[in-house]
Amino acid sequence: MSTAIINGHNNSTEDFTKHVFGGGPDNAEKVVEENKTCGKILTVLAWGLVVLTMPFSLFVCFKVVQEYERAVIFRLGRLLSGGAKGPGIFFILPCIDAYARVDLRTRTYDIPPQEVLTKDSVTVSVDAVVYYRVSNATVSIANVENAHHSTRLLAQTTLRNIMGQRPLHEILSERESISQHMKALLDEATDSWGINVERVEIKDVRLPVQLQRAMAAEAEAAREARAKVIAAEGEQKASRALREASEVIGDSPAALQLRYLQTLNTISTEKNSTIVFPLPIDILSYFMKNMDRKE
Image 1 (cartoon, rainbow, N blue to C red):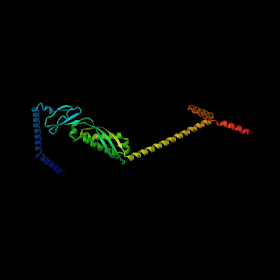
Image 2: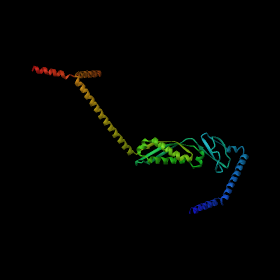
Image 3: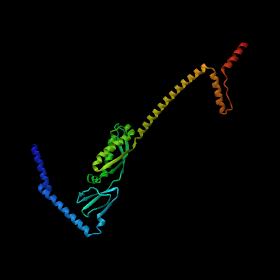
Image 4: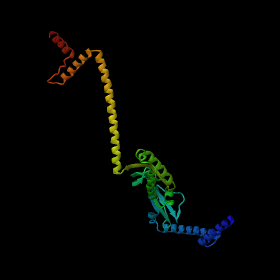
């Protein structure tokens, strides 16, 4: 059965060759040789046209590309050997050569806001910036129709896919790791297009208004709870300090008198017109005892 399949495959290949070239492999080689011969003839005619129309043809044949540009030349539909030309001056033949300019400078693409459903079912709007450049001019022209447009579409879909695989708290707190992961994915995918992704940055993550209000209320409640705990701890420490102070004053009655004097000094420095002098309780008790004796 496998032999039959192989034979069928060979027959289909031969049929395709006959359909394209009008015959078998010998005829295909003949067609290739004819194409080479035709190409040589057209090249000779192009050189003759250049010679006959000189010096006017020099304005058409000589081209210049800038330091940040490269020229990919096609001769009769085939890539010219030697790779991309430039920077500087290069030569093309009229009628049979075509070239494409490729800019090697870094480009910036601002990804429009993408509506994404996160892993924990929260709808967010995320936008980012991608910095990329052409690393291989020949590959960027020959392997993909529009390398820049393809890279931008891939950046949008990659951003949506990555954000959809993460919960909301990771998106808000781990932007740098998300950017690095996205850069690695884009650089790997665009390598065959001659594109090098240099940097990816997450610009903004926009939350729904209701979710913002809920998160603000949650944060406010957490702050109030912490404030109450701190106030309670402060009162506890203050009560302990007052207890220790009362024990010291109880052991030494003179300490209370010194405290009275310190209070008077504090009041006098504030330039008050009325000074309240604390009268010791012991003096009053002494006068009370004397009055009781007289009675």
